[in-house]
Image (cartoon, rainbow, N blue to C red):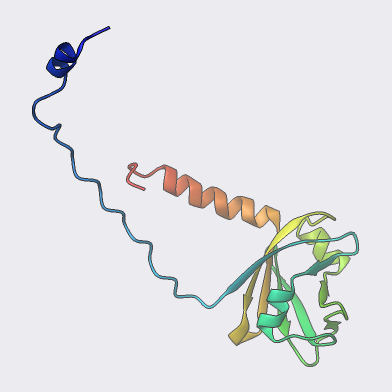
Length: 146
């Protein structure tokens, strides 16, 4: 075991030079007005997220139309729409839309509401896999600065 004199010799007489810490790059400020939520589709094809429904200003019996764009399900405020918000504020996706978008009971979906346009876009897992895959490939192919 070293004594005090030996320990003093091992200690550097000048402080170790430290490199300055790198500055963090600040994330860009969010400019969108979308409200996001996650929901699990139940066995009846219903999705529920009160925050999303409230952000859109929808209430029980509010009418909407439903359109498919690729594998996205788009619900739009529409006074003449054939679909209605349920009493418990659930939104029902018809079986044809579920099959087209590869949705099954228990699927988690990303909801993106655009209150100013009265639009709700439902992103099924198949869409998220593709989009996230592209984002990750782009980020991980970078030069490591990220």
